[in-house]
Length: 244
Image (cartoon, rainbow, N blue to C red; front, side, top):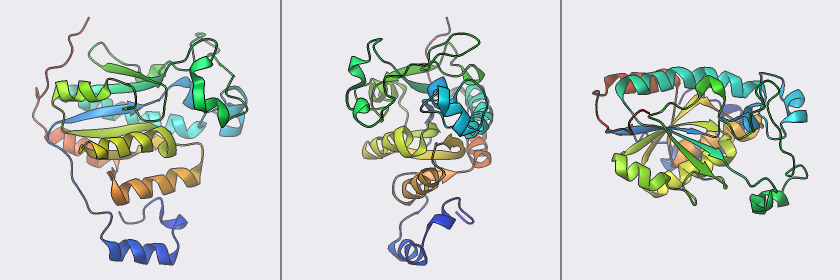
């Protein structure tokens, strides 16, 4: 990608090594893609657009206003996918009220015990934000670790759907998105990562993680390109869950 978001973070040596190594080749989209929206919930977005240092006072894992900018990109992607009848899968967290099952998460944050709820609807932080809420024919996968594949039925759902590829958005780029992309790569799925639809609380981690994934595990693509690919797909590729 020219003028890539990660360019300012690469040294001249890095740029030469990547150019000489052959990494970053385009793998291309798959023929039967599913759209995967990772952890776009109130815990990572806050309950309103706000500067990150303000938002994390209440929502300790919030990515601030950048999350809401990405939500604006995710909405047309979901509309295009649903118009074509592509599967839309979401992930979000799940936790016991006593936080016992936080496990290793509790070791790396002094605020891991905090549980926030939205001010207006009193929704739990793991609820997917209303602006892109799942529909009846969508699939929600609950997880407790970074990868959407770890300890979840995601793999079996994708097998049932006969999906050969993923179009991925969500948060955080350096955490759950990256872990999921690496696991999808390990399962030989083609992965396209929509740049505008991913967000992180760290600008450096966001950019460098996109760089790493584009170099080795996925194609980082612009929203416009993902929409164009979806638009070229035939309708009715998938047998989706029935609407309630």
